[in-house]
Length: 171
Image (cartoon, helix red, strand yellow):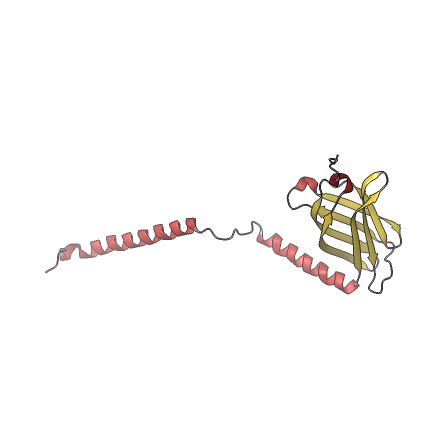
């Protein structure tokens, strides 16, 4: 003999099934809220394109074989800092007649980011005057265009601004 009337067994089974599904969903939602996943990128397409550009830049840079020696804040009379880049070929020859830029980016604040137009001072030496907003680590993107082709390099540099190190605030 059954406790449930045979006429209402199948509706009771449906109700029990719904209760199981609802309980499982509540458990999964609670678990998901307690353990959030890694945030997904907002724009997957553009991030993937940017990644592909960086890889292509690295390949073309390696093919040219150039190297850059960077002095991010050389003391100069009449200016806060002189940003200098010495660009040379694989065999050590200076690379002359190139147009270049340097983009410096602080990780903590966009207010300290700078874009510098580099001017050729002598063959292979490119420079720009700048007033760093703060000392510390900067992300640096060097870009040069030349008859041999474009050259780009990403790196990190440490900027020790003499004026800021003495406690004199930047303008």
